[in-house]
Structures are given as C-alpha cells and as structure tokens.
Length: 486
Image 1 (cartoon, rainbow, N blue to C red):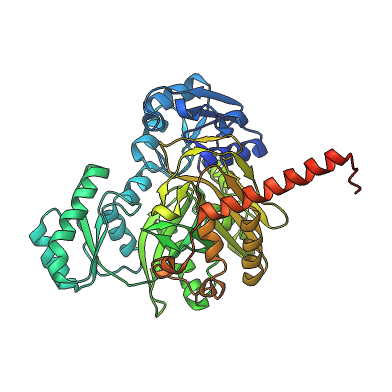
Image 2 (image 1 turned 180 degrees about the vertical axis):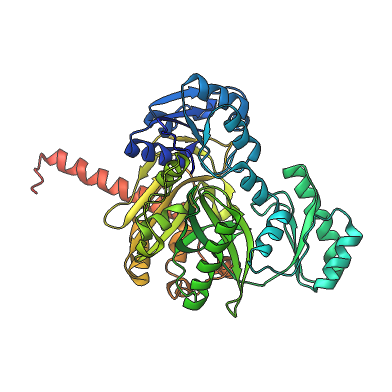
C-alpha cells in the first residue's frame, strides 16, 4: 500500500501560462502556491496570482534550471512539494530524485520512469517488450557515421535521423536518398551536440505525412491505469505542434480502441505513475508506431480536460499525495471536440521569427465553449529569453463542425496589438477546406503555407482603423453634446 502524504504548499518550478494554470489548480484544492521568477519575469501575471513569490537572480533561463537553488528555496518556504510544469526541469530524473532526497514530493512520475523515457533507445526497447508496435530502426545510440550509413541502407530510404538524447525537433533530419546521408548525418549530430551536449543518434524508417496521435494516460500508485482519449497533433511546423485536437476527427475507431488498449496495458506493465502521454505515428493504412513517451503534463492538456471533464493538474497533485484514482475507465465519458491553438509572439511574414516586445492592446475572446490559458495582457512586455508561446486558445463543441465554427468566431475576436502573432495563420487554417473536413497529417502545413495570406500587419492595421473610427464617433457625439440611449 502506497504511503499517503497530504500536500499543503507547492512550489511551481516554472513560469508563464503553465505556472498560472498550476496556481489555479492549487487554489481549487485548497493548497498554497509559491512561484519563483527571473529578473525579466517580475511583471508576470503568475507572479501576482501566487500566494508567495520569490526572485531568482542571474541568467533568466538558468534561473528556472538551477534545481539546487529551487529546492533550497522550497525548503525555506516550507513547501511540501514541487510541480515542474512542462519544459525546464519537468523531465529531469536528477531533479525528481533530488526532490525526494530533500524530503520534497516531486509532482510527477518516479525518477526511474523519467530516466527511462528520457532515453529514446531504452524506451523503445522497454515499450517493444510490453507489446507496443515500433518502426524499423536502431535500438542503440549510434556515434559512427559508417555504421549509421550501413544501418540506413539496410532499413531502406527514406529514413529519419533523430538525436538520441533530445527532442523538440532538434537534431532531426529526414534523408530521402542515400547520396544525401552523410551531409544530413553530420548536420543532425552537430545540432544534437549544440543543444543536448551529446551527438548520438538513432535511425528509423521515415513515414511520409502520417498522422501524429497521442494518448493521455493517468495512473495512480496502486496499479490503476486509465486513458482519457486521444489527441491529434498532426498540424506542425518544423516538428513543433501548432494546433492540437481531441479527439482526432478521422481516426479509424478500431485503430482508436487498439491505441487505448496497447497504451494502458504498457503503462500497467511498466508500473507507471502520474499523468503521461504516449505519442504515435499512424500511417495511411491505420498502422501505428510508438514515437516517444512524455512524462509530464503536455502543453495541449486542456483539450483532454475539456472532453473528459477531468482536471489533469489536480489529478497529478492527488496522485502524488498517494490518493487512488477516483474513477474507473468505464466511468469516463468523452464528449464532443476541443481544439487548441498555440498563440505565439512570432512574425509569420518573416518566417515565424520570434517577436518579443510590448503588447499595446489585448482583447481576449470569450463566450460559451471558449477557454484561454494565457500570460498576456495589455502593457505586458514579452521577454526575448524564452519560447515564443504566450498563450493557448481552446474552443469546444459537441460536434466537429460546431467546434470549427466556434474557432473561427473566437479567433476573429482575438486582438493583440503591438507585436506580430500567429493568429493570422490560425484564421487561415480554420477556413481551409481540408481542416474543415478533418483531413490532417504532418505534411499539412508544408503544403498549405504557400497558399495562405499571412499578412499579420494588415490585420493589426484593420483593428487600428476600427479604433480610430470609434474614437471619431465618440468625439463627434461629445462635440454635439448628444446622449447615446441603450
């Protein structure tokens, strides 16, 4: 029987919208929240919302990665636990173990599972052993170009080279033909060294334009494992997710059920605890293959929360306290569709280059079926030190068609001025017929981008013209001393 320990106070080792999301979960559970913040995050909305906040000076990125300082601060603030959010230290087995060694509860999986799934080679072997389908490829890291080329030839082109100790699309190259292999291999290993300090790679058969499907898992300390449905994350740019959907609009129902069965069975056999996401590629014949397991809350977790009605952050906290799951698989009723749009401070006209700066006007959408997880507000200065995502717009409805219509309305309502954003891209996508029909794969944006009008500045100018017109009308009314009747 797992030990139960009540958590009273949680330090959030993160920033931005996920820090704010965790603060809200803590408040609903009656737990105190503590945040840390770097010098450039002093005006972050999450800093204002938390029960306590403490600065960590120095390099703005290192501030969220120095786990010894974070643990020391958590102990001084009398915290019981630390929630890592996503990114930064969320998938650091060393951090999770250091929390345990210092008498703090790490709100997430056991360190050994974080370590296992952080090693792409070891995780592939482990998942194959518990019956999860795999693409043809290597089981051990490769650090020799001649061996790598021999393996690639045996698998057959096209192949994909991936960094063995990294993610996020870094250290990844697609090789269509044998004569390009050496150049692409050197490029991939150099990038892996630069970002992850390790240049080893593995090689897999490359599926052209598959669907990217992931399964949300929730597991307690007593061997209870359930799924909360699937998400379609096929709309990507340079291997970075742009839009996420729950459930996938066109996934074959037999394939869907098998994905659920295989995923929950694998996590049960491995003794996994906490929330986690298993990611797959699904080919045109509905065959699916394991990519990776993410041992943390995902950026796209809201779409699952909406269709399932279950708060994933709260479940993470309760599982860490030793509570058993409060529901059986058959009690989970997935309902409707939800779509998440990542709102990024970036300029679509200039190749989506990040565009930090001052938000001069911020008008958020609302109404039934609209959720906004964001750290942005009028006069917020977006720092240049971090990822360009400033929020997530999530819409939901009972049918796919209604969800798309709601997305168009909400995106039209969303106004951010002062900086370019990718809202214009999302507005184009939701009007595209293939998106409306749910015909999505990982090549969707590569095909569509050249056909979209990404004039974000034009959209911004239109809003400025509207505001000037309104100001002129108000001035005219005031000049004539007229009364506007309601």
